[in-house]
Image 1: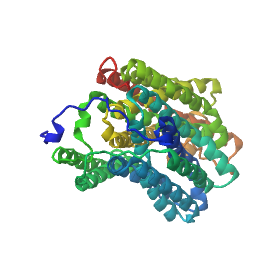
Image 2: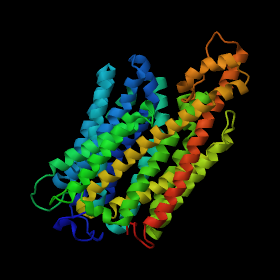
Image 3: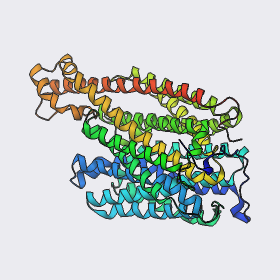
Image 4: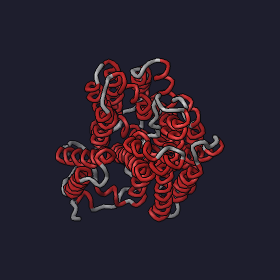
Length: 529
């Protein structure tokens, strides 16, 4: 691809010194604490909403399609605004746009709880996603600006720890709030967190921005990128309901990819691009972007069906299910700083493949799960998954943001967050589709094998969508013996789907490990130091 003069030089080495500041605003660790509040709020919200969705649907009398938009509206707005948020922060002030994101996200959260209708919930979820797109990339941009290279890896490790732990704690917090307060409280909880984040951040955060002078903002690039990402993410999130073989799904994804190709071509021809294509000349950065998407494909996709298994198949409450996944949270807590330390010492070429191998082991370990498995078969995969996700998140974040020059820190943070969201959306949609397909193929056989009469099994095939969510299609007018047989057969059909999903995911993790090992040069490439 031809390029302009601004793209003809190699990516600058990471030797830039952080800007000097006075007093409390010169403390990099206070900056890390400040951005951790905002990061915790956004990541916690992403996972607690999944617990609240069933209650939202019941109280607001919403259809399944309407309920899906509670998640999809947020994802679409977030995906479309992440790189824009990072670019705005780089140009006009990372502190300014981080604080704007905190305020907007908090107010939108309160508005969701007060809305009183599914239309209001969806609209304010989209607004919440937009402000999340301003907040998220500038967390990493601020850290890149204040931490020296030798300490940046550890800062990213703590950032990754906060991200992983808040995501994993979501089901526990959400379960407690939904069961004991209301679904609205899942959103109201962001208010005190947001106020603390705003006050503390306003007090300690230094302002940082590019010193490249005044230049034209890349508005066409903003429009092209937003349209491309909207097309891809829309196609992905609708693939589950439209079907992955449908023309609508692939038309949306194909149109989005085509616009993204036009965006990439356009960005090489403007003097001040929204997303400098020269960033991708760094092999560690490009590899880190791909591995980030794969990491959250695994993380969010697996957690989604694990929660279905624990609650719908095993009959646990949301709180009980959340407690069972505590080993994942604790492992993430350990793995993120450990991954950062290993990355700083040995480089991402060791840490990223190691984390992906651990995730592969976790996925293949889930092949032993049955409808009556003991907890002893569950916690080892949870620990391996938490260790793997935490290590990869620390290493891939450092590979992306740590290999970008300071002046592009916000854009790199936006790229990292965009890949994370796309990977998470793909993970949930693709794995649910795999489970649904396998349930469809095996439900009748499993029901009759469990003792359900063939005529009843034929009628129950129409309930395959419920079974794909782990729900057994039983009713009160059935005999106890028939209900038990249906529960057993439905559970086995669901686990058939889960086993297909974990095999595919495990193989992808192995491919990711090979890609990470080959995509980062030996030595310190990809490390923060």
